[in-house]
Structures are given as structure tokens and as C-alpha cells.
Length: 243
Image (cartoon, rainbow, N blue to C red; front, top):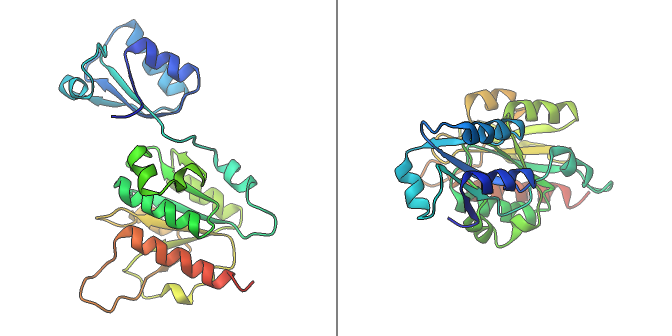
């Protein structure tokens, strides 16, 4: 586990010095004043914690972890407004949103395609999402060090906010009868990519303005999410390149 710190005091100091925490594991049933202070600090800073058996913590480190192990983020996350403000005036915004993509290689692969396609940012969930760790950065060929990434507590609220700013929300789903080639990507767009096994959640799908499928001719019913994202992104490029 890279970029790891352990022990209550070191983790508290990391949070107070505004280091961005990727994962924070706390021993199940852990109590005490210092542990309570740490939990309160996590709540104030909106840091998601995960309670785990002590055996997991022992596997992560042989050091005196005191029931706490944290992983520092491999990249510097930004706010949604930061992504929007960085879009050049002469470009049409393009964002990729991850709804449950949990494989770091898929996450990194999509980030690589997004950066190559000129996307302006990535949005992922604080929960149930692939960690942006060294493996993800490697899979992205360094793209995750270039393209801004935002983590949000609520995917649905974020999509609603983007819709209010004039974005169309486009879902990539093989269940749609409408093909991506029949959509208009020359307006501000968010492309939503779903989980590897279940696809986009029903709650998120309901919010999408368009549900688009990639035509498949072979016998396998769906593409890998990273491959599907690349096809979606470069259809956007194809449509916009002549503008």
C-alpha cells in the first residue's frame, strides 16, 4: 500500500495539514478520546472512513497502527468549479463522470482516453469508486497527473448542478436503441460511464438527458468500460473537430 501513514496522531496531522486522504481504515469497535477526535475530524473534512477487522490493518502494516491506517492520495483533487473555470473560452466543455467504476486499470485507461480527447475533467464518487492510486496513474500513462479530477459526495446532485449550468448528461449504455452517432456532442457534455458489472445505476440513468449505445456486430454483448469510453470520447472529437 503506497503513500501509507498509520497511527492516530500522524493521521490527524496529515488531515490538519490538508493532505488529501484516499482511503482511511479504522479498526472495528475502536474507542477512546483520540479515536473520537479523529472521527470528528474526518466528519468535518468530509473524509470517508471504513471500519475493518484488525487483521486487515495488520496486513497493511507491521507498525503500531493504533487502529488507524490511511493512504494519501496519489494526485491533487480539485473542486467542480475549478474544472469549469479552467475550460478555455473557445472550447466546449467535456467531462467524464464515473458511476461505480471500481477497477483501477479501467479508471486509468478512461483517464488516458479522456486526456487524449481533450476532456476538461473527470468526476468520481467519494464512495464505491476505484482509488486513484499509483496503479491508476500508471494505467493512465500519466494522464491523471494532467487532467483535473474531482471527487463528489453525491453523483446525482452533481449531475443536477451541471444540468443547471447547461450541460447535457449522456449515458453510455448498451441497453439503448439510440446510437451515439445520432447524438449532438457540440454542446457542453458530461459522458457517464458505469460500473464494470452493473453499468450505470438506475438513479443516475433517470437523470441522463440521452442514453446512447455503441453498435456491436459480434456475439459478445458489451465492451469493456474503458474501450467504450474511448469510442464515446472520440465521437465527440469527430463531431467537434470541424467546428
